[in-house]
Image (cartoon, rainbow, N blue to C red; front, side, top):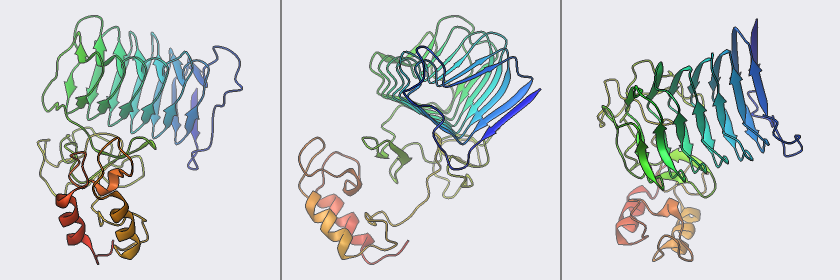
Length: 297
């Protein structure tokens, strides 16, 4: 039996009207299946629950579960989890126990427990993910052996970045410099350490937006050709095009002028005007904006 669910419009799959402790999506005893292109929000248990199934979970937004994990996989399952954005869930972003799992190029942010929690690392691979600002650990493994962990950015998790496991080849720890994390825009910006820092080996050819994962420029430490960490590939556009009308002009100057002199957390601060990501909109950012002025995307 094979099940395929795909929604290119990213419509709602789950709302808060679900009955108590009900997963938004439940897959049981499937020989093959795919859940792709959905926005899954406000489930009252797991966003996606997989048991004794072979399943591909890709290019979904999974957020705001109540009393549940973003993705929960149980004994007897084999899952591929890639290019998902998983944030603000009540427990782990991804929870798996006793399964074969490939977890690759996901962006996992601000979940209320671990970013990724596993009871066994046997048959599990964790690669090319951004796992940041979760309220417990970034990656937590309760039993040996440790899973292979490669080319991830694990940073700023409240209790610690790793528990029961260690960073592997290519792993980094740094602010990913999202476009606007407050507004849940987890595209990475031009100064992000995640650019060109992952590996193309086995990675998805396209990102969450359907853009090809190109290797230009090659500036990072990943295996050639370099891909970016997380669900989104970075593409260079005019950094100063704040209003996204295709050019850097007077409208963008007004937006920058409103932010100049501000600092992160203070009144008037706009992260898009903070070109160097140092938390201050100052003369360095003014010089960067001036260099962009008059350009078109």
